[in-house]
Length: 215
Image (cartoon, rainbow, N blue to C red; front, side, top):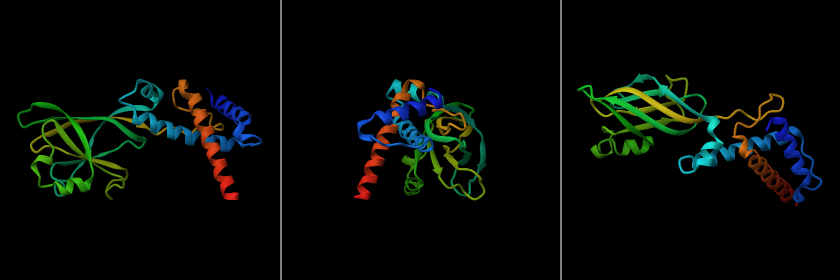
């Protein structure tokens, strides 16, 4: 649906819904509810992305793949640590892979496992909790170190290995639904009716909360 059709169909459903009798909602507020509904659905579909074909179809327009470049190596902080700028539009990480080369030039593709800095620090001296040939640990920083302007990720490579590339597949941030901007939902059109129904549920909950406060 176009953004105009989304708003029109949502408004029609509001007028026809028995729990919203007599309720009139401005277009700007309908946009807000649609955007909140879109946010909820994207999170829902991401959580089932690897299990459900429909979920992958619904958010396929938001899937991106990038090859990241190493921006900083800090051997004084974390041994074999390499920092990367995360994409500014990153929302959820779907898949990540590292190709690293050992001292003999043999290349190996390794899966990446995200861990918290607390977990990493607690196990810093445990040889069984470190990166190895088939596994690279990743630390993410919500607030980046001062020398980095953006949010960053830190890969902890296996000792003696050299990074070749870090591939990242992710769900990007969606553009907000906007009539003035001519921007419709970036969810697949096959789930636009589900988007409208979710927005209606949010409107009903909002009305119930308002009635509770007034009571």
